[in-house]
Length: 174
Image (cartoon, rainbow, N blue to C red; front, top):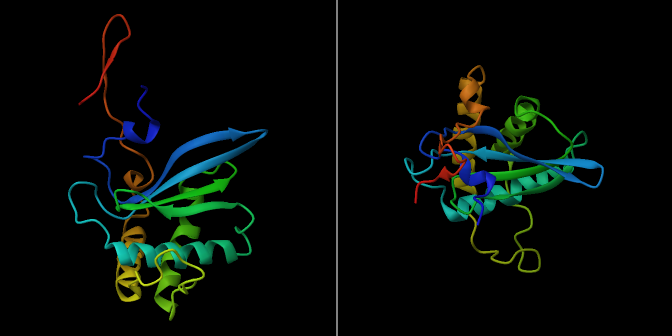
């Protein structure tokens, strides 16, 4: 079985940031998946599950209501490893081109008084939210993005080096 693209990123080297994870053609259109990484994988504690759930609701609502971006937003949701989120947008843009959108979304969390969509009719686990912690994580990430905006490592994935034999066979860590 072929290793999928997101597993070819060296998770021991990745830092928080905004990364193009992949671009896909859908008919004549391009959709881009972005890795919005809040935590260093395997080095920092993951994001609290209830806070992650609240951030999912708040930022998805923000993105789908942004007048400049709402028509391009396909998906916003958490990574299974709880170190960040995936954002899928129509079109092909660099990580730097969506920096202001991502920064604005995380900064907007501080002004939220109620997590949207938290009634039993709207949410599969409506009691699992933590707005206070969501605000803390969002503030931490927004400050990090502002402090590091000039650094390429918050926009460019580190890639794993793969040993390739003369016959073209690639070796992967187990």
